[in-house]
Amino acid sequence: MIETKTEFRIDRLPKELQKTFQALYARESSDSRVSLKANSVYQGDAAELIKLIEPNSIAVSVWSPPYFVGKEYEKGLTFETWQALLRDVIAAHFA
Image (cartoon, rainbow, N blue to C red):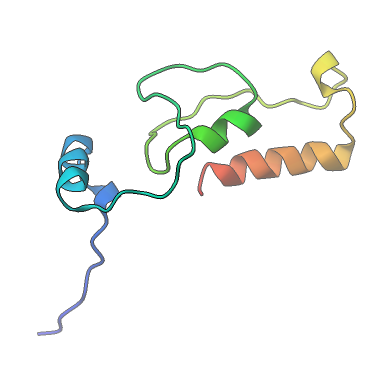
């Protein structure tokens, strides 16, 4: 029989069990950033808001990216900065 070692990850547990496990065993995080409140809806710039989401805490993200068609909020964006914005926001979903 071949033994395989499975990595234990808290984020794979049900949310309530995660909280219990963290309260009992996890060390306090040195990360002092502000996180968005769970079970809430936020409206704003996804590029900024996504930085405030606790990792592994969401199941779905709904956002409407700028389409680079000359809208007021797109002024000042070059095609390259628009592409970089989309790349960064999409990548942050997996960070």
